Amino acid sequence: MKRTMTLTGWAIAASLLTFGALTSRSQEASHKGRDSSAEAAHAKSLLRALRGNHGYSYSGTVMGLPIAAAGPITFDGEGHLSAKYSVSLNGEIFQGSFTGTYPVNPELTGTVTLELALLGLRSRGSFVIVSSGRETYFTGTDRGAIVTGTNKRQ
Image 1 (cartoon, rainbow, N blue to C red):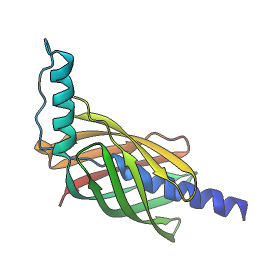
Image 2 (cartoon, rainbow, N blue to C red):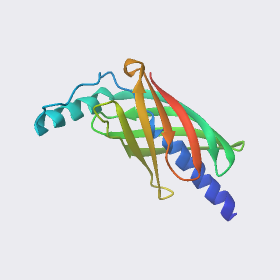
Image 3 (cartoon, rainbow, N blue to C red):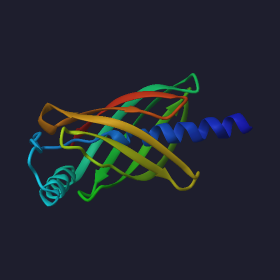
Image 4 (tube, rainbow, N blue to C red):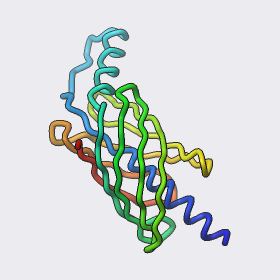
């Protein structure tokens, strides 16, 4: 029973790693010579470029078990996200939702922190924005989870 709860928690946490699933229409901008207010404005423009609805999918392993997931994710353009997930962990299906935050760096990379309040879990990942902002590659960075995936603007 305890193993099932732990695996369920990891499945949901891994689902949160979709997180990372971000896209942007922004192009990389040089930040040489920028003052802090210009850098802050650029950071806000990157966050706003993510505003809207996206779709994600990923697969990998969690604690040695196969996992795959897909779902919609919405970015508010202010650094916050919300999403739904449908995840298969070793053939068992779980569904739910999560929230999180996503800072974006000037070189179009970033990290994501996801919160699954119901289980008290926090999950982290990293991402890189590609294809002129139409697609993102991401990976989970939590111990025990090996997941990678893509995200596309809807």
